Image (tube, rainbow over all chains, first blue to last red; front, side, top):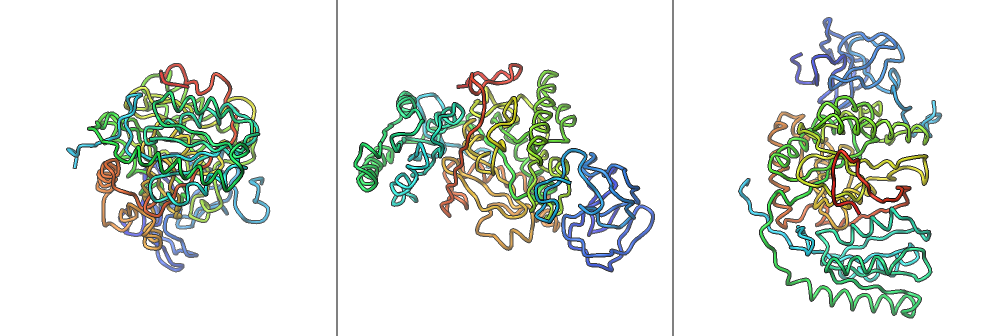
Length: 102
Length: 407
């Protein structure tokens, strides 16, 4: 991938990283062509490099970092709303997740 | 820069310090105010405050205090006791005195209360400063240096800029014979197999796997892992993703062994600090925040700490200088006065990982030679020590890893 906005840490990864903030509406390259960013993707956040079916492992640094909880389209942001840990639930300040229980 | 000659303060146990600070240590939180007031006029003259808040005795805390009060950066200690707490102050004072350092104890209940203890303490500190201020430095080799690394306030940039850059600096240090310590097993959940492949021998590999599995079980009982809300707000989604980023701090060297809090590395090389107690969960989270972790890295002899942050932590530490490596370019612009190194340049194509790694290594040598870090200039001297259930014999080491200097 040659795009100054994106970084893929390992060739086996199915996500890449925004290395600058990407605005909604920007066109991004993907494994199968291109996609339009549906929302703002901040610096450091993950973007699906190709379509990832629900249940598939998310790979970054060449290692699994969790699993998809829904079908993720190429070019879509990958975060708490569509993936989860395979070890321990993630703790956030938001309602329902405050003490780390699903 | 590679040829810089380090100069350290020689200690009777053969180690050398890169600072010559005095400690005022409270032995229960009830004595903290008095101890803090004693330090107040001297806080920019290398007099630091540490202590243990609990009234009930705890072998781990007493062992930690022994190690910290005889840390190579420490030149003398004043203990401040209320008088009725459980801490064995006589044993601690004796331990410090046996290390060849000036050691004194003030007991508030025997010294006439708050004001008279503060007055007596300040006079004692003044006198110790007069004795230690003329201390001479002697040549110190890189093989005599121990460096710890930690990440705090991590975000998705930490694992792609600051942490791997610190890993490069670690590789340069290990190559030159320094001892390098990385932590913490709870933030390596998911990396156990990759890490075990770097072990010096199969026994160390098994010990690395076992340490991470123990951490995973421990955190599962507690309900969640070492993952703060800010981590998710910064783009990290899962504990294992944070782990992979944290793991990159360790660089690419062979892993020589595992240390427990208070173990001194037996020789140069790369070591994992296992901070999770054995057995059932007691006393809550293994380390309640970054400074609790730093205290353990210092108890293993770390002369200085490399601290990476993406979100923007401001902490420093008592005893050992902290070098802040900022992972996120916006955070660096927003908090420049707190940051020593701008690793976010890597994301903006203004520097490579190797260049930032070298910059960290060069800065580390200058700090070891006396240059003040940003957090030192700002008088950040945070310190945290809590209860832990390490079982006697205290501070034992995984046998295969061979640390000889456990308490």
